[in-house]
Amino acid sequence: MTPPKRPDGIIIALDGPAGSGKSSTARAVAARLGYRHLDSGGFYRAITYAALRAGIDPDSWGSLTHAQLDTLDVHGHATETGYRMTVGGRDVSAEIRAPEVNAHVSQMAAVAGVREWLMDALREAGARGGLVADGRDIGTVVFPDAELKAYLICDPEERALRRLREQGADDLSTEHVRAEAARLQGRDQIDSSREAAPLRQADDAVVIDTTQLTFDEQVARIEGLARERAGIDRNADVS
Ligand SMILES: Nc1ncnc2c1ncn2[C@@H]1O[C@H](COP(=O)(O)OP(=O)(O)OP(=O)(O)O)[C@@H](O)[C@H]1O
Ligand SMILES: Nc1ccn([C@@H]2O[C@H](COP(=O)(O)O)[C@@H](O)[C@H]2O)c(=O)n1
Image (cartoon, rainbow, N blue to C red; front, side, top):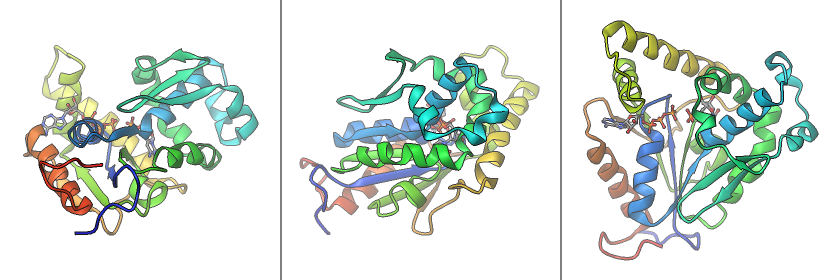
């Protein structure tokens, strides 16, 4: 077992399609290890929310300059356990989950200039290690040297059902579940077919299908792999 080469621990990269369980799993694994959680989708969501709020036409997002992005005043603030997103100094944790942001975020995330603009902030989060980061290109582009990479997959209708339950939806009919599955797959289609850092499994990622797993099973699986990769004992301090 190799000891961590970063002062605060290893970097764990979780990628996969929409609703496959990345963020919830990353948060739980980070809590168990005493690591920080980086939800990179939150950054793309905050930029999308800020651009919509500023009235910038989505058709023009492809030509957004770094100076224009700076004026949107989007920031991720490190907390004890993760990152809190603000726009114009205001916490936007709830707003960035709105259906309007869901519908537009993949369009924003496909813009190469936006991804370049964000890269330093995302990499800075991993500078000391001790990080569980989730997204679409964490293991392939943001932290290609992450000590552990996992690629989570899950049946689309199961993903849709979980998402609807999370939202407290009353209507869990087949029709409603299929409509939500189509929305998730629409986002996956844009994310995996774009030129800039498309969603794809890193060659050295462990694939975990969460369809038949309980939440605790998938968390325990990744925590176990992380402890192995970090060379740490289950009962020992992980940093
Ligand atoms: N194994 C599981 N069994 C049941 N529910 C699960 C399981 N894994 C995750 N969930 C639930 O599925 C929902 C989607 O998970 P999560 O938000 O982590 O997905 P995600 O991949 O980060 O999605 P997105 O890409 O849209 O941000 C959450 O409500 C989460 O609690
Ligand atoms: N590394 C990433 C993370 C996210 N995206 C884009 O943001 C969207 C929202 O992400 P969630 O994880 O919050 O669902 C996602 O659909 C991608 O378009 C990305 O490109 N790269």
